Length: 285
Length: 155
Image (cartoon, rainbow over all chains, first blue to last red; front, side):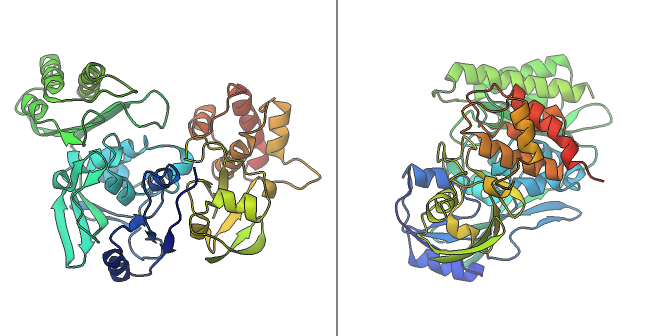
């Protein structure tokens, strides 16, 4: 339960960090360490050097402008929880993040860490994928931006290149009338979800749904949108028939895994039920 | 690596291996063994300490990351002579049996009540959900924290 030996540096600029990563191909980045430290303790990861981002300025800001919410990579869950502006600027983010881990972990765990750890059941990758996030990445050849769906490659895998650092997650701001919902199920408070649903859409003057986004966590090897459920919602009234149909097609569209926490069929049924529950709650508002 | 931090109001320095957790550093280097190491991978909450006023799991933080920080452990919450009001409430409400989880419960609850002296039972349960106790069933712990609120009330 003790990590293998490693060196440790805490550079004070992003460029310096990138240089160190470039010179040490098996280096790992650490920030809050809430995902990495258990991996080190179990020796599932044994990097030769840890590069701590804690002295790099400006990565811990939450910036909210007219059109977007920009979360620096070192923004912690507690920062999101305490930022009252997010309750209107991005209420789905605020709600989903309430479900991340426990009190102590929330004081250390970060947006960037969760995205780069890429647990398929984690809330932040789910938010990124379900909310059209743009991932801002700094690397040896400068800064690039990719959409969240292209960022996540699989369970605990991203498409970050060598020596690249995720520096921010940009989320389009929610319009005031946007409808949204979040629901997840875990056996114990703070555990990773067995399945989780993220939903948001517009409803026009005639009561019809448009721009539906239906996200899923915990039911595949990567957070993803459920296109079939979005198709079942777009253009329809948010009535019991639509809700029933959306759950049905969603359960057919996902390929959940079996593991010690739940079987594939259970996850499939759970996801459909959670989606229907979220939609009923939105319809009842 | 040489690090310096405040441990229970005392400035301390140590030359530590980067891989040493803050929990091990506090226990092995400074012999303050009130901080308990349970699971060593961030699940049980027994090792909770207070870093810069926030409750953190000291097994999920490297000692080198605590450089220049203000660290408070269970030893810093009371004097040798007298229990703190929170500790006294734990004793009165039978909020511990074997006592292994208790340092983590106390550090966590201390931060909670310092910041949220009006926390209700639901909030207390939510916050303490990150601290595992296998003896008490939590009822006594929640009652103890509820009773201790008076000692933290602002005013």
